[in-house]
Length: 550
Ligand SMILES: Cc1ncc(C[n+]2csc(CCOP(=O)(O)OP(=O)(O)O)c2C)c(N)n1
Ligand SMILES: [Mg+2]
Image (cartoon, rainbow, N blue to C red):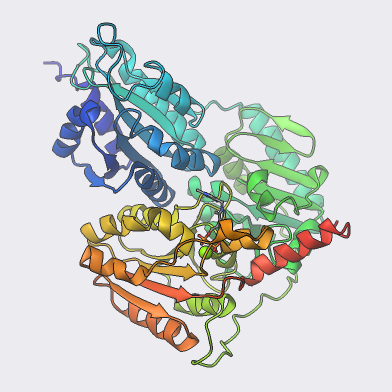
C-alpha cells in the first residue's frame, strides 16, 4: 500500500527536522495557528520570544551554530516585524528559514479587507523576496512540496535566508501522490573546477609570500578542518576577516589574527597586504570593508573563492562550488612553503590596574579575555562591544558570533538564546552596550524561561558611545537604566554592578563559576572611554580626513 502523503504543513516540518532544525522561534497569530498546532505535534520545539525581531535574531544565532535556523510568525504584523534580522542574516550569510502564516486562499476574493493586510496579498512576500535568496507562497498543493524543497536547497547552498508563506487553508492539504525530496546536485562544471584548481595551484606554488584570508563561509560550510589541513600542508599563514573570526583557532602557530583594514592590528594588516598571492576563502569583500574601506587588497594577486563566485586574478569561473574548490585544493600538488616568520602575537597583558581603579574598556576586555574558556561562545552586539571583541581570544580557540558586517543593534541577547539552544554545551558570554540592551535585552525573559545560563556583560557607557566618536550631541544620550533590576522583574538570574576593576573581576568570576542561571553584569564606563580597536580606527579615519591616509 502507498504510504499516506504528508500534508503541506507536516512535510515542511519533516524537511526542517531532516535538515537539523530542532527549535523554531516565533510568536503565533490567527493566520498561523494551524501550523503552530502541527509544530506542537512534531519533534521540533517552539520557542516563544518577546518580539518577532528577537525571534529572527535567535534563529540567526541558532543557524550560525547549527547550520540551519527557523522562525515562524503571523502575517504582516509578525512577518514585517522580522525584516531587519532577516536582512542581517542575508547580508552576513546566515541560513534562516522564515515561515509566515497568511490569509485563507478561499476567502481572498470575497473579503479583500482582511486584518493585517497592507497593500494587497502579495505585499509581504514581495518584501521578503528582496531579503532572501529564495521565497515561495505555497498557494498550490501541486507545487507546494517542490517549492519547499527548492527554498530549503537554496538556503543550504548559499547560506542565506529563505521565505515560505503558508496560507491558512493550505496547511492541512495533502497532495494525492507521495512526494520525494529531489536532491539537487550542485551544478558543477568539472572542467572549470579542474582548470581553476590548476591555475590556483600554479599561482600559490610560484608565490614567495602567500597568505590565506579565511572568511565566514569557512564556518558556514563546516570547512574549518579542511582549512587547518590546507594550512599545515602548505605552511601558508592565515588571517581571518572580522565576520569569520572563529574560522580557525587563533592559537594556531600559523594564525596571524583578524584582518580588518585599519581597524585590525597594524602588523596583521601590513603582512596581509604585502602578500604576493592572497587566497581568499569564503570572504565577502564587504566584511573586510568593516574596516570602513581601509582595506587594500590587490585583485591581481588574489584568488577569491566563495559560494557565489570564483575569480583568480581577472579570470572568472562559473559553476565551481566553494566546497568542491576547497576539496580540489586539498588534492592538488601544492608546494610546501618554508615556515613563515610571522610578527609576534601580542600576549594578553596582565591587568596592571589596581582593584580599586575605575574600570576602563581596555581593562574590561582583558578581564573578559582571561575569563573565556573552550566552552564559551562570545556573542556580540553592535557598538564598542563588537570592536573590542575582535581582539579577544587571540591565544586560544574561541567561538564568536556577532553582526560584524550588517551591524544591527539588538542582535546580542536574542542571538545568545539561539546559540545556546543550538548547542547546549556552549555557554554564551554576551557583550552588549546599554543602547543595544535597551532594544532587545528583555529577551532575557525567554532565556530565563528555558533555563539557559548566559553571562551578559552590559557595557554601560551612558549612551551611544560609538556615535559620540563620530558626532557628539544630545541625540546620543539615552535614559540611565538600572540594568541589574531585570533579575527582579524576571524573578530569576543574578546581577552585579561593577564600577571598579576589582568589582568587574569578581563579578565575572562569580558568574562563570555558577552555571545554574543567567548572570547580568552592568559595567559602568565613562561615556568617552573606548576600546583600543576603536581608537585605531578613529586614528586612521582622522588621518584620512586630513588627507594623510593611504
Ligand atoms: C538597529 C540599529 N539602530 C541604530 C544603529 C546605529 N548605531 C550604531 S552604533 C550605535 C550606538 C550603540 O550604542 P550602545 O549599544 O550603547 O553601544 P556603544 O556604542 O555605546 O558601545 C547606534 C545607535 C544601528 N547600528 N542599529
Ligand atoms: Mg553605550
